[in-house]
Amino acid sequence: MDDSEIERIIRQAGYELQWERGADGPRSVFALRDGKRHTRGFDTLLALAEHLGRIDRPVRFIDDAAALNTAVTKHSEVAGHFAVRLTACRVAVFNGLKFVQLVDASGDVTAMYELRPDAVRRTSSGNMPPEVVAAFQTPPKHSLLLSR
Image (cartoon, rainbow, N blue to C red):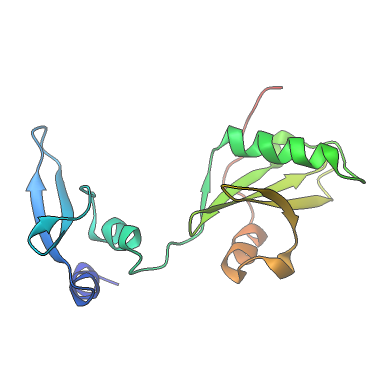
């Protein structure tokens, strides 16, 4: 998808676009509605369209020690918990929700947790969006390194 298609999608939703150059040089784009600024500036049209909910956000793996610690704490409270190898664990964001994959010391057993603003729950691939399941099936590009 190129910028002209993304611009068309944003305009179909009733937004106008305005580009501005910051004092330090980089350009940013923001949405106008009824002639008034509706969003903060974004580096790309794609980022703006994702923010406006006009394009689905892809699954992104992030380094989030707080989310990982929250999932590990919750995992230690459940029956059948296992020792977690932190360097093999991954955190992903999809549509505003965080998903944490915990891996045991041998690397064979995993547990998935969904972190919502109001709760943390253990989940399975049957209860997750297919995009998230597919993302976690790909090998990690890097490991989250934490010291404990």
